Image (cartoon, rainbow, N blue to C red; front, top):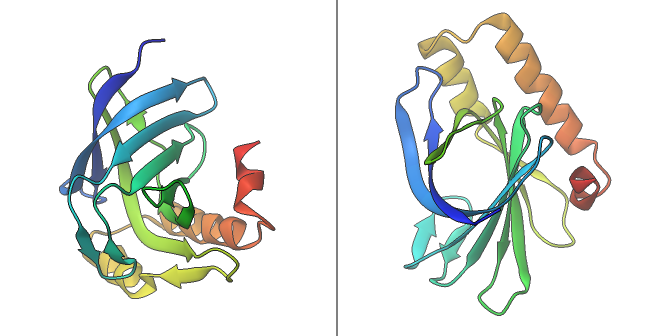
Length: 157
């Protein structure tokens, strides 16, 4: 498979665009899609702090799972953190990968307990965008699954 650049689109439940970036497709099987991107400039993130230019983001998506995981590495290759999005399974085309972000995130710093982020945003959007009860239940189930994993590396099996 020849690597290709994709536009990644994180969408709200109503399909409006939240964020968009480019990443290179490095592997695609029937069970997982792997992308990699590099921060071209330094970014100040509300929860992640200062992300330096050159930081590498490995992105892992599963067509049958309601989450995706980002592994951030410092420019020297050392692990910075994991960032997990509770999200609907992605759709991929020749030029793009899109997923519906369901607001709840799990941040994991090396050697620390997971931190749940954006529960308030989930509750706000649940009402504002009329999340169906089955979507709410699946988001909560997915959060429990992410928090019960002994090690994030076990998710890559």
